[in-house]
Structure formats: C-alpha cells, structure tokens
Length: 70
Length: 140
Image (tube, rainbow over all chains, first blue to last red; front, side):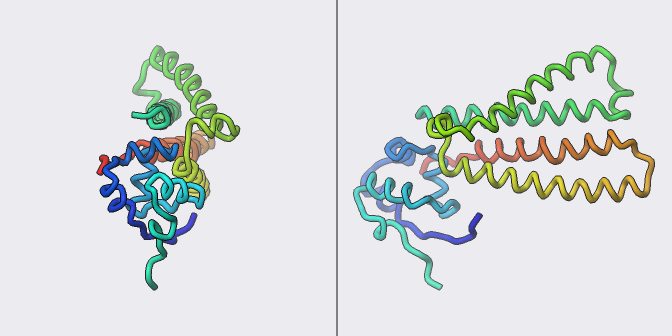
C-alpha cells in the first residue's frame, strides 16, 4: 500500500459537466465509493481507471491528475 | 443504485454479520460465558455460526476468481481486502505475543487462548473489511 497522494480536479470537472459521482461511477464501471475516494484523494487509482475517468469527463489524464508540489 | 454498488454493499453487510456471528460463537465457547448460557442456546448458536462462517469464507475468497471479481468488485475493494488481510496478519501476531505472555504467567487453558486468537485474527479482519466497504460518504 502506498502513501503517495495524487491531486485531481475531478470535482470541478464533474460540476462543469453536471454529473453526479454515481453517474460517473456508472460510466467507469466502479462503485461510487471508489469515485468518492479518488476525488477526495484517499485512494490513488490505477492508470486504467484514471484514464477511464478522464475519458468519461471528456478531458485528459494530465489535466485531471497531478502530483503534489514538493 | 447501480448493480456493482448494490452487490458491493450487500456483500459488505453480509460479511459484517458473518464476522460478528463468528466472534459471538467463539465468545460463547469461553468458560465464563458458557456458565451464563443455557445448553439450548449453544445448540442454536454453534451450527448457525458455523454455517455463516463457511459462507463468509466463500464470500471473502470468491473474488479471487477472475469472473466474479470483474462483476462484483473494483480497485478500492481489492485495496480494502489487502488492508484487511494485512491488519489481520498484524493482529494475529500481536495476539500471539499476548497469548505467549498470558500463557507464561497464568493457567488459562490453551483452547481459550487459541479461541481468542481466532477472534482477533479472523473475525476482526472480516468485520474491518466489511466496515471499510460500507463506509460510503454522501454524493457530492
């Protein structure tokens, strides 16, 4: 298990698109809990899931996710 | 609620019940608890808890196989399972050390100590996994 964090702008992007966590979860094939955990930085998703989320939110991976400044 | 959410929450609730049932069953096996319960209570609790435990183990291990895993769980569930197993492992080692200390200094029967270790090493990880699975914040 890793303690690394991954910043994201999912909440903003999701609000722009006007979709709920549940709808995003449906589109990406995971539970809403997973979407919530990723959004709040609790859970770092795999590359595949991150790309699925980016695709569902019609944006790119590096727009959506970034490493925290050290 | 989507199917995967329903399955995830349903299974977590199921595991929570099973973990508690197993812990309750093992607790009733302690001498002090036995003295307070009647024989009929034991005859009911034991087989029920054993059945539930069997189902719990099946439910916990089923996602090892690829097809059920794809349909019933996602990445967070797999991480929660790993955390539960890791905590179970650590708890079991801790319980072992405590049992060693207790056995060295008292006359507690070995089967009671082993039972306590089972509760700590098996029930608690199952309950912990179920609680992690059921902890879903509100949609934001």
